[in-house]
Length: 261
Image (cartoon, rainbow, N blue to C red):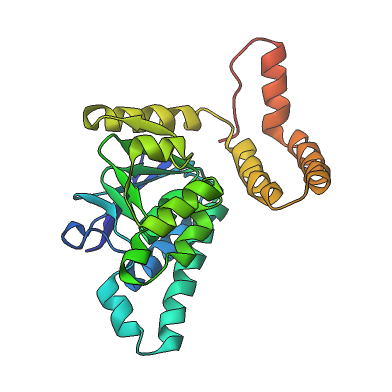
């Protein structure tokens, strides 16, 4: 296990990277130090041929409280330094989306502002019943403009505006209704649910997932005709890789496929 005072990470069974935000006393804020550290780790994961799934967890009562407001206040004395913080945070969020591996946010507690943005940037989300989600910037005069970019691409505009304009916390149940999270579980079953979805993903073709994840996010930004043209090319490319041929042959012969390691 690699340790840092603000986050931990370890490789499980050679193919799962578990990242744990580990600054519970400050409620796991996205400080510039944490953003930079996570970005460096994500760049390594991008190149990894072993890691197939990334899990993002936390310690303490909050999953992630957003930006460190003390740091924001200090950096606000310089527009250049403050803009650098927001740009680096945005870049890190985009890197999560660009990772070839599925990234699962495992939320137990509050995910607020940029913390909620981090949740929305992940591919899948598992949350405990007690977890809450919030874009509270309006409450302190700092509208959650960058967090809303990722979140508004997951939830409907009316639900997004409710969160942004009221600054209220929404429950895990509401977050699921808003399509922000996938699975709700109780604390006792939390790790079991994480293991279930992680094991399920590990059994799939990683070649296929890498191709599909890129294609999914790319086509979201296209009009219908362009999206179909693009994904037709992707399907053609996908069919040329070893796992697609193996998967089809295994299906026809009614056997378990042997995916590329």
